[in-house]
Length: 177
Image (cartoon, rainbow, N blue to C red; front, top):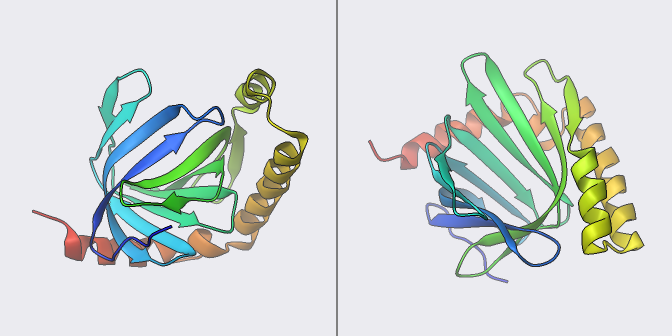
């Protein structure tokens, strides 16, 4: 597994458990790249869905990927504060093509006041059955959902005060105007 370099523009590829591509974010600037953590920033980046549909993100975002955690976190900077979208996923891998992970459907949406809602539990159950998630994966994912909720409550990692803002300031130094 390679390490993306600070300042490098990379693609992010999300897959499903069955190996099919789920979603691709075209351009994310690497703000920190190590074997264990990748932090990236993007704004108005092109996203391509598995069916070929495309859309463009609406606001700046800071993306946090951890090679030891079964989740990733996106902090979106909006007019009313930072909104987070958290994906329960495999830990990331990076090769010269892209940063890659498996999306396991379960998501948590966190609002600026740190309240949150769990999303897509029905989709998770549907895909768990259809794609035959092994029991060990099901247990890992549920344990990591609980860990992610603890991070939110404790304001740990990307949920810490000023985490997203400070990385966004760094992102602005790379942004093309």
